[in-house]
Amino acid sequence: MLTALENFTRMMGRDRPQWMPLDLPATPPVADMIEEKTGIRDAALAFGLDFRFCGPNFPGDPAKWRAAFTEIGFQAPANAIVNEVGFTEVLPPAGSTGKAYHLSQMLHPLSVITDVKQLDQLPWPDLDNPNADRGLAEQVAEIHRDGKVALCSMECTVFEFAWYLRGMDNLFGDLLEENGIADWLLDWFTEWSVRKGRLAARAGVDVIGLGDDVGTQRGMMMSVDFWREHLKPRLKRVIDSIRAAEKQHVWVRYHSDGDIRPIIDDLVEIGVDILNPVQPECMPVDEVVAKHKHHLGFWGMVGTQTTMPFGSPEDVRSVVAGCARLAREGAAIIVAPTHVLEPDVPWENIETLVEAVRGVALG
Image 1 (cartoon, rainbow, N blue to C red):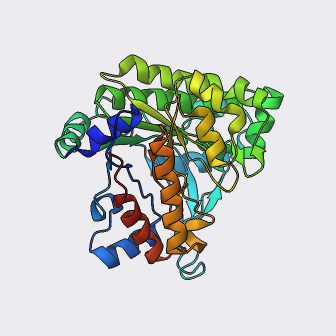
Image 2 (cartoon, one colour):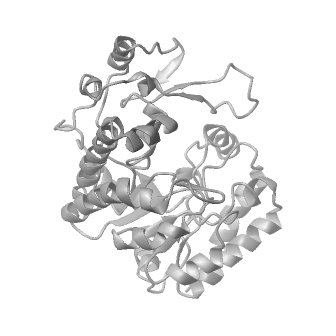
Image 3 (cartoon, rainbow, N blue to C red):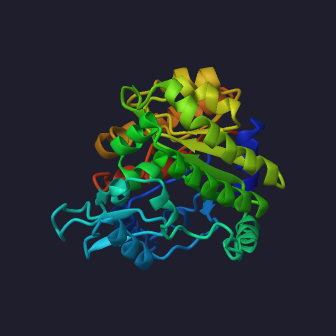
């Protein structure tokens, strides 16, 4: 019997995998449901999934961010949650969103910035922190001893955190005006991702998840030329740093929601190994897989806008059967919802997804 890591390696190498790896990203309310049903909160442990998460950490100081926000003229609400890079959100009043208590209002504290010099004064995490990867290699070794795949998630790699802080309209305006503010932010998050990716690769992780949402349901969020000018070179720099540091091949997964078919060839060109997801509500799964299966693996084809919340268990089984067909036709397939499971997904469909994938024998 293969381990999950051996089977994943075979799947990515199109070399007689025995089963389709399974991932189940979940929101906190769904984690509540999993814990209620199984006694274990972590989906990976509750269902014996193929992947375990790990990664470096560059700690920041939320209290310093709050003080810095006040200094530049933004007053963060007392109940705001501020993370290590200044991302700021406010949770809804208790009970106001039903089971979806995790939904939050995003604030854009750097929308008040008027000069690029102000960005230098903010309390960004120390990217030279010698403790950022403390214990990471040991954690990866433990994951490997369990036969699992070590996955480092680094989504919001370049673009998303930059616009979370600045506001998307402001960030696009900065780039058009060439005032330097957006470039400073995009460059800082590129370097942040370079440092994280390098440490993760040196520690021996198997998969590094990169990504920025650049697609909508109807196509690209921006022109392809705009993406190629501002985001592609920065993403390539992150991937190049991973390749330079890897001890063995690290599979680079790229996430974007929406229809991003116009840039898939570009992603392959700069070193992406896995596309996440192939969103069936806006990208034809069979068409995308057929066109790119010799260059890419595919992670996530089970719709979170359709099948998981609103389909029947039979609909779930049908989608899994379609994934199995693609795998048998030579595609590298990792079964997963196209995004995190939200609280409108019934338990029966989660249970069916796990059972259906486990019931498929490829070899």
